[in-house]
Length: 110
Image (cartoon, rainbow, N blue to C red):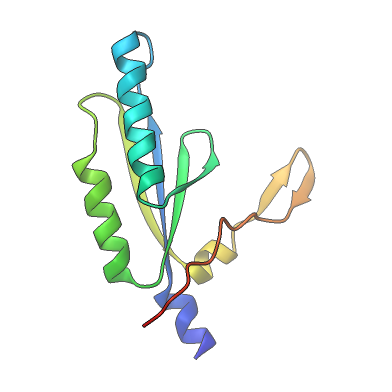
């Protein structure tokens, strides 16, 4: 069952590069970021946000919400990976291996 869950549980990653030259662009940037945080995403790195989803269907719901909040300008990427693939990510701090900080595990009630 655990092996099955490794492929069932999904991570949604949102990468974005938005213009921040003017005050209006910075507000749009901040609003987009706040909407993602409100939807349960956590900051992985600057301009990279993650969200743990218990299923592909749940991931699609959150991807739809990100798409609804897309600003007019900028580059945004959305990537969905399985928990197994996420677990294979290698992270480094300088040349030292860094253990991934998984944001949190969402409690499943059903």
